Structure formats: C-alpha cells, structure tokens
Image (cartoon, rainbow, N blue to C red):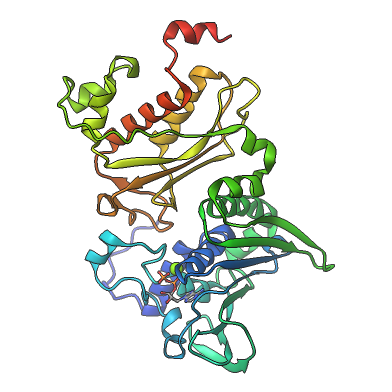
Length: 383
Ligand code: ADP
Ligand code: MG
C-alpha cells in the first residue's frame, strides 16, 4: 500500500451504500432462498413452492399463498430498510416474524433481476412487477393469479462480477449448502406445506424435498425418511418449577458433574425460563451418524447457531455412543424479551440471557431423556 496524504472525508452516495450493504446481506443463493421463505411464512402462507432452476445457476422462484402485497406497497417493499414488521427498536424485543430489517428484497434487487407477481386478498386481480437494480418498478401489468406472492430471481449476482464468476463456477456447491438450509426451515415449519424442486434445462424436475407441515415428526419422516424417524426419541424437558434454593451457586452448578446435582436445584434456577422441545437419535449403537450433518438448532423456531449447545449435546451423546453423532432437532423456547437476534446479518447468531442456565437445562433434559448419564466407569464399559 502506498501512503497517501489523507483525503477529505466525504459522504458515500446512497447508491454506493446500498450496493455495499446488499452484498453483505445476500452472501449466497441459500441465504437468498431462505430470505424468501421467511417472507412467505411472515405473510401467513400455508403452501410454499420453491423452484430452483438448474441448481440455482439460472435463478429461482418462491411462490406462496400468503396475504399478498397491497398496491400501495409495490414500491416500498424493495426500498432499503422498509418493512411492515417493525416500527421502532423496542418492537424488536417482541418480534414474532422472521424479518424485521427490510433488507432482503432491496438487496436482491440490488444484485439480481427481480420480478414479483402478487395478489392481495383484497384485490380481484394479480399484478406483475419488474424491478431494476435500484429497486424501482420498470414494468407493471395486470395478470391472473391466486392470492399470494411469487418472487422470481434471475441473473444472480449480476452486479457483483467477482462473486458472479465464483458462483457460476461453484453453483453446485452452493446448491448443496442451500439444501441444508432448506432442510432446516422445512423441519421446523408446522402449518406450512413446502415443496422444493430443482428444474433442469431439459425440463426434468427433481424433488429436493417436500413436507406436509403437519408436525415436526412428520417433517422428519418427509425429509429424512422413516428409518431416521424410527431412530429418534423425543427430548424430555423438566417442567418442574420448584423454587427451593439449592446449595450450589450458578457457577459451581455449571462446573459440577450432572450426577451430583439435585434436579430441583436446576429447576429452581430455571423457573421455566427455558423449555426444550425436540428429537434426538436414541443411544443404540447402530444409531447416530458419522457426520454432524443432521443437527438442527432453533430458538423460538428461528434457526440459529449456538456452538456451546451443539458441543454439549454431542459430548453427552458420545458418552453413550462413542464415535457417533446424533441427529438432533432442538427448539429452545425462550421468553422473546430474553433473546437478541440482531447480532449478525443472517440473523443466525443469537444472544440469550442466562445462557449458562440454558446449558444446565439442556444437560438435565438429556439426562432424563437417556436415563442416568453414565459415570466414567460406565463410560469405559461401553466399548
Ligand atoms: P422484511 O422481511 O425484513 O420486512 P423484506 O425485504 O424481506 O424485509 O420484505 C419487505 C416487505 O415486503 C415485507 O415487510 C413485507 O411487507 C413485503 N413482502 C415481502 N415478501 C412478501 C410475501 N411473500 N408476501 C407478502 N408480503 C411480502
Ligand atoms: Mg424478509
């Protein structure tokens, strides 16, 4: 780098800011599709159709039967930081929708070609809208369609040449990453039927996955098959809300071996703050997997990453079943005001109050689920 005298500080143009921000929101095709699924769910859809074209290389479409979009919002939906889901910062404490930042559609417009067709429940006809890279409508026509919305994205990353070239080379890798994201969303969504297909140039359609959304256990069968679902058991979570004071402080409780802790001590710390719903592979030797590819963690049904929880679950599982990793679907139910989901652009990083207590509740739940955790002696005899 050559040293230059500092230049005047200038304000970056709005267009440039938008482009920089868009490029940070939509990192890959999986994230793009995930954002559209989130929008469909937020619009109360009960059916979502996902069509990936040529493994994503030719774009994708997400169609739903949700509420549709009101004519007065046709322009606003693709404007940066325009959202129907949040008005001020305090709303974020109670947010029930996936979206809240109003960035997905504007970012997609900034990076790709976007067409939306929609019909609001109050309208007798549908509208087709074509947007340019500034998010402005360039074409508008009346069409026939059912109530709901379809977002059609093509020429992915057209405004980011480096990323586009990379994507065109590695689109199959991206496609595989997208499948994991699709699985993650489709597993947890109850009340929504989802079908995702990959359509090839020759017209053939490969089903990527399809769920009926009746229940999580049905979704497990639909996505991973009956064999997987037979191997999983429901996680039991203590519901006891005893209030006796324990002899351990929170810190020492955390370090102690679970077998030394009186269960009511954890419960008194927890006081129903955390509930755990989910499924995990049972501990038979045949069960479990050699990869961690079927592990799904959620907070209040929002997919997220919490390394400490995943690590704990794997460690406990391996006390019973060495060298194997469990399938798990774990949905942590936490008072919304105790969670901060605004840590990262992809909303996957979360902060939780009292996360140490959560780890304890997790430990305790697994111990009830599997029976007493093996002591070191039992652990050695597993071989
Ligand atoms: P956010 O989801 O954070 O609000 P988005 O850019 O994803 O931001 O969407 C902008 C707005 O467009 C949403 O707030 C919603 O009002 C509308 N919208 C997007 N997708 C749909 C959809 N599938 N059905 C109905 N409305 C939608
Ligand atoms: Mg959104």
